[in-house]
Amino acid sequence: MSKWVYAFGNGAADGGAEMRTLLGGKGANLAEMCKLGLPVPPGFTVTTEVCTHFAKHGQGYPDGLEAEIAQALEQIEEIMGTRFGDPERPLLVSVRSGGRASMPGMMDTVLNLGLNDETVEGLARASGDARFAADSYRRFIQMYADVVLGVDYGHFEDRLQWHKEDKGYALDTELDADDWRSVVAAYEGVVREHLGRDFPQDPVEQLWGAIGAVFGSWMNPRAITYRKLHGIPEDWGTAVNIQVMVFGNMDDTSATGVCFTRNPATGENHMYGEFLVNAQGEDVVAGIRTPQPLTRAEREASGTKLPSMEDVMPNAFAELADVHVTLEN
Image 1 (cartoon, helix red, strand yellow):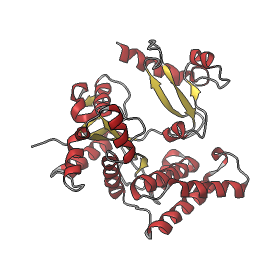
Image 2: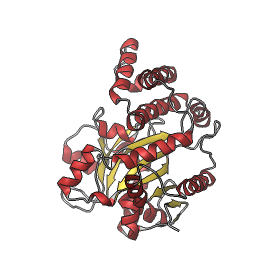
Image 3: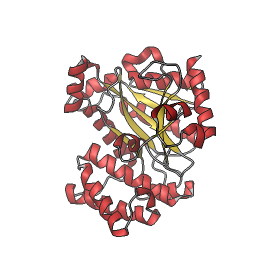
């Protein structure tokens, strides 16, 4: 029998770097980093072969996939001590693409999956931060509705802008928990207005919707054009990586960003990247806020006045430096 799902977490992984064709670059590297003992959030990879099956069988899935995904979710739940859809201690995941060749920004991603009108309250209680929970939920509704349900992202941005104007706010960071709850209600109204039904509340339904959207995005116009320009065969497909959420938007002691083990422009062997405090990944690429450099050297080279992670988050930077050393060795 074929194996469709490869799990990773707690220092162990079903796959490895040599399985790039099957797991895609991201899935293979996540598995390898996990086996190296790096602090990789647990998750699992649905293989590129499922993408091929999905495309050839009218967006249908192979036999046995549902059971393998359910088992992989249970494994994550055991590691994390949370449960998918639990209104008290909800497990939340990200759903990302990952082909064997890098295609940055060409395919779809969904973050904060597993939130609904009940689990958002459980997240607020578990984290002790109602603002963070409501902010995460509005992000999820907006991203899921756009990527999976086909409701244009701009409709949600309009509602958010109207709310900020009514309140006299200039920045998203000025909104408190009640503000974000109001925005969530407005976003749910957008979904009803455009689809004639409520935003899906069942986390399992949400998960399968996101998986299908990521596989489907392999054939979206921008991905097709990118493959033609870069000579990437259509039949390679993409894997889907489902991974426990780590939140960069909890407060001013959390952050999100991207890090390279080499300077991508010069090839120099030093950490290189950027980050944003109190943000999630889409904030880095959306262009709404200006990311900060990771290192003092980057800051000096770029001439920016924004402080580096090395200066403002020295403990986090030190942990990142340890990861860099491990990968180099």
